[in-house]
Length: 234
Image (cartoon, rainbow, N blue to C red; front, side, top):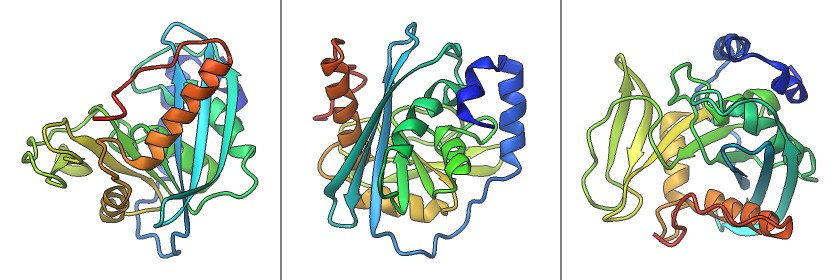
């Protein structure tokens, strides 16, 4: 389904589409070398139809920025937990199509398979574009875990009915963990290893941190206040 049609779906139809996507998910080892990696973020006000999307591409593992892309889009799909991809993906897809060179791997600010139907935005977008994706979320959406120890890179598995769906990772001492889950075409362990390599002293991994700065920049340029979803300097 073309993302431009998402806003015409009912919530029930969106859930049916997620269940269809679920059968196509591939959580498996990524054997292609990762030479470029991108971070993606989407920003919007909860009751607004205006969305801002940004992608920052890095040389990996050096984490040197090599290109960026942005997009502004409108959607009328409602804000519903578990279905946010149907609001966010169209804007992100526009930013993706504006990229001249596509990265080997994309890290998204959101869930991968750590989702009730295993179809968080990272999984959804990976299936749409056939690019390997990782979800790196600031808060837990689904799954149970024990709080990891308060030391850098302490981690705790996240389970749903006995199925491993993610890892709670302590990326910085005295800060809440982040929640890592593979999106599509990458393994759980690789997902955690990549995010660890992207931590640069902040709670948030550098790809999505830089993408968040980028979308805030275009919000300001469009006359809106920046979205302070989290403290970038924690």
